[in-house]
Image 1 (cartoon, one colour):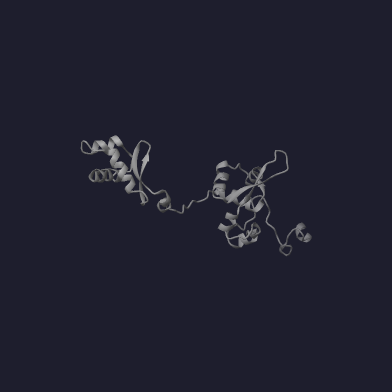
Image 2: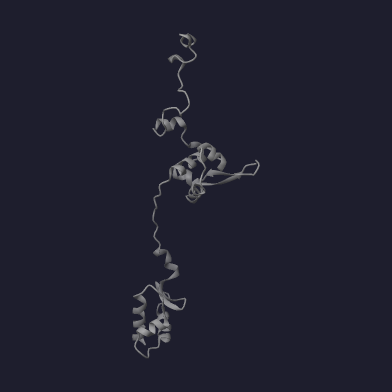
Length: 197
């Protein structure tokens, strides 16, 4: 019986797929008692790091359930946000609570549900209160995870336009379609004499 146990043990260790009683019998010498050998083998592995377990109609060695955490591997996955996601996140952060329609109005294009879903999956935005307007649209706000990720105590700590320009993150040129601002002492429209010369 001990030799049969050893042979079954070798068969089960050599494969990751569960083996049925018939598959095991076909590998053992004629006249082997697989059922009895399995009972003994199962008892021998009780309380060990691996257990002999029944999987469907087959048998396999598996990690003891209480030690499963040792087999887990945590891996940091770096995902780059799309331009649409960055713009949507910025609008939510600076205009919260904000509805989807308001986000689309600010961006000038529709927001795909995939973008919103991804930001929610990252736990950077969440649903806020519904607006008390017709249709009661849901609003979006940033989460504590968003604040933690960017080292902010609250959303009021987000940098302003001047800080973003000073850091080189915003273009210093005025938006298209607007006239550049002039100081009064640089000959602006307030100087009446210059206007008519």
